[in-house]
Image (cartoon, rainbow, N blue to C red; front, side, top):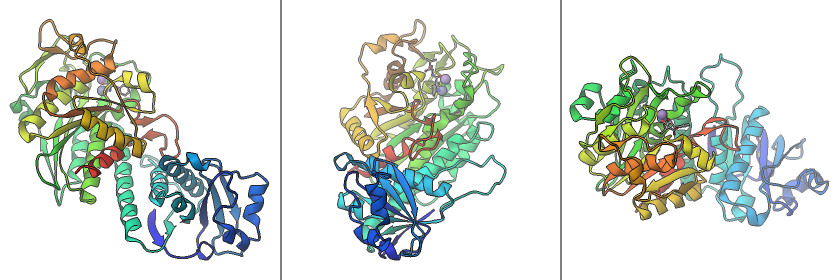
Length: 486
Ligand code: BES
Ligand code: MN
Ligand code: ZN
């Protein structure tokens, strides 16, 4: 779907459907001219209470020949004092999916209402772009309905132009990330994930992939132990984006392309979902891709310790002790707590070879994350309040919301091992936070934030701009955070 600015009057805009956002209890609002041109048809729908402009409510009318658009879609934004960027985004999602499913190809947004609220049409467009995502690569070719063009009615305006461009960059990175996550593990292997990372190289982005023997040489025994039970070779991916000055921010993404649990095998029910255990890594690739397309003035290093966690004959076993790149030894209590094993070697590698000014890891790390927060928030923990506050603020703006959990010193006890420096699980109690505490032991003094997206990376049902399946959560959060860095 191509988004572009068009400087014409609503009534003169040739298209399949003209979208008019309306505010609850404000009647026809700013559109009395369009209403007169349709002989009062729009007002009738409103006075009859068929359409009350409740949030996300839609009503489609044919415009006959009085005005150029074939149809008018009324979309509700809800009560004036309750309208927010998120409500606008959702309305954009709702309108686009509705029109797409009806087979509309050229659609138009009137920006009068949104601008009068001092909000940006870009949020509406963001919702529209995110909502029309589809993952149908594995279906036999059928006739697909797609919106071709989305005209935004406005005077040509460089600010709006730039913001629409950025919105498109972010949305297309999100689509890319959703594709990676939705792809099943027989196709999305560690090798395929490393190829996806390579695909973004060029310009200021360079990608390096370490093979198993390189990783062995570097002493990343914890990470390697995860890959041991699989025939798929591990791939340790390093993506550098050189867009700014100074030490980079390290973005570390959990990249387990399938998590069977290993010898500590997971129950079979729902196991097919464990293809999304590389969501963190996909988000890192997508965020760096968008950062480079949008030329964000930051330095980034993305690290993806990719592996498949299977229970083969050479797999790690409970009780095994492995040595990390830092020299710390870890006792594996359960091979299903594999994410943290891979992540701590990635953190250790980042500190040793890239000296980042901050570390952010993003991971589908614990089942306890969704027990605590459902599908509504990312669990955040870290060692630096300033960094966490910035991420929190970015989360409020993008509605990829984060909720902070504590990392009390007392949790250290939970992961003490009788035989090694640490053990890889502290048991059920507090498992969301003890997983993070395990990572904290490797972040040392570097400002670090952990984002657990286990509850949010997968949408269990369609939402206004997130179709069921991989959500791509984290892309907009990280980009918004990076955009606001000074
Ligand atoms: N990948 C899982 C966490 C997960 C569960 C993500 C459900 C998304 C949905 C992770 O590797 C895992 O298995 N965690 C275990 C750790 C436990 C064995 C200490 C968990 O949280 O159950
Ligand atoms: Mn696991
Ligand atoms: Zn996992």
